[in-house]
Image (cartoon, rainbow, N blue to C red; front, side, top):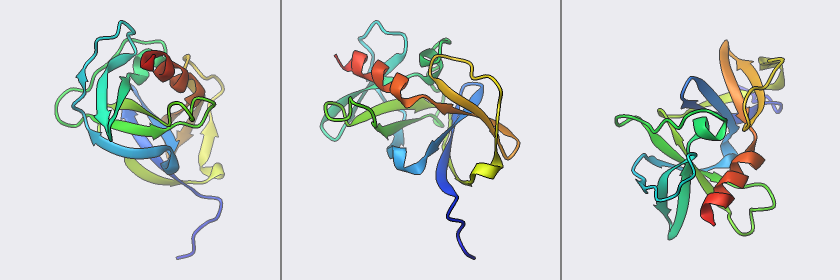
Length: 152
């Protein structure tokens, strides 16, 4: 079967009340949700992940997007270690974000996405529908700014 060069390998990431859509290359690793307790007063930080000798603040997508923080419950929660892409990359090459379940892979082409008219939330770049599922493409610059502030 020939691959469509227009397709992008992506990951669908379950969070509270929606699904995030990110390219595969943005994810460095997915680990079990076992952060150290948060000692920060920022509501978007759920704790800290000790990963490869680095302490990463674990962000709550929900709080970063203007809602209440929702730490994962049970054993399905995961932490995504994400590659950074903005001007913070040099000082902070990775950041971490909690999920409410296990991410799944998808091949996405532009014609499969239907853009929603309004993007709601501080950390939302765009809202789309993919295969009938409402998804959010996060604004990575907002998330990286919050991670940078939490990192000190």
